[in-house]
Length: 178
Image (cartoon, rainbow, N blue to C red; front, side, top):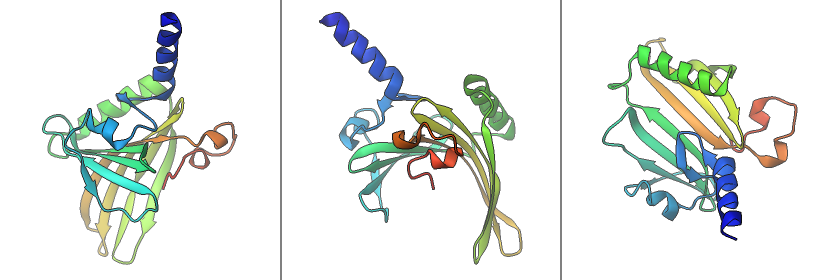
């Protein structure tokens, strides 16, 4: 019985653990996440059934980590790098580490126009088991095309299991991607 329990634990951990967040798993509740990130702050979101929590690490390369839960089940994590701690060389190194670990990603161009600003950048996405990992660089420009902000994000999300076998593009696999 003990061997069966250990086997179940190993399979569950390998199947549902989240890259770079191995202590967490898809479907964790906010209380389970607080066991690892006790100072979560709930923030406003307009999504039906979606709750968003932010964590601000005191050390490391992240400015914040955002956890998204639907019906109190974790389905997405977004990490925002701290611009004061991460240089362009660091970005290149991080990207190369991800590429070495997960292979060549699919690449998407970001080019969004809004009334008062625009967003340009790139997104590189890998699939790892039940998880997609998107390395996202976004630059924000005002109406005069002057850059006002820049963000480097890594988004981890649960792949919709009903679409996992679909041969279509990655974005159709992703549960609530955008």
